[in-house]
Length: 247
Ligand code: PGA
Image (tube, protein in one colour):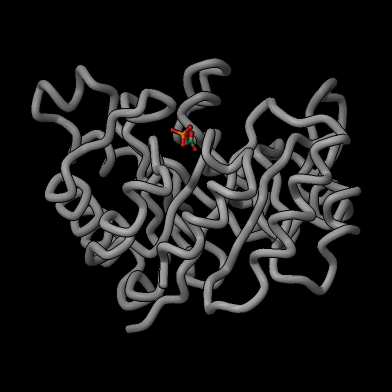
């Protein structure tokens, strides 16, 4: 099955309104090419960036949402609010949220349901720590995260899975291409067990220290359908080079 390449930029807690120039440089360079491109800026920029990118080659996404539709949750943002601001997707269960905010698989799953109810694509993040990999437990950890975080009714149109080994995020270190390929095949197999044939269409992204220099060899691997890019998504030149590496 052909899956359309997908490259998402996760700006994390970086970017003021002045960063719109960087977005515009990305827009100027991203036109054309059969790849879905998404920028997930901080929530403060979603509405403005969505307006700036409307009908163009870059979509805008959120970095988290609450599982509830509304209510007394000071500081949180619902999936419906993200959609209302123009987002089309949301990153859920990123390891920084799992670590900094103690998000469990069950909480992530509730957020995925909320994202779908609001019409958003859910980009569900999974990945092992270095200690878990060293202990030979990486595949088990990821399988548990997938089973716990992905709701049963998942389909390829609204689920994207990002494999992000925690020890590769922001460190400049990446797994070997053989290890990435093996984990992505494992994830595809787990999804087959969970959702049957629908698994063939789910885009699987690799994330963790993807740069212009290593993107092409990672994206060329079987079952790697694109990337979730942190640091290198903040600069248009780097991000566009990574997007071009999907071709
Ligand atoms: P990085 O982050 O590209 O800076 O390693 C990836 C991520 O956390 O999504």
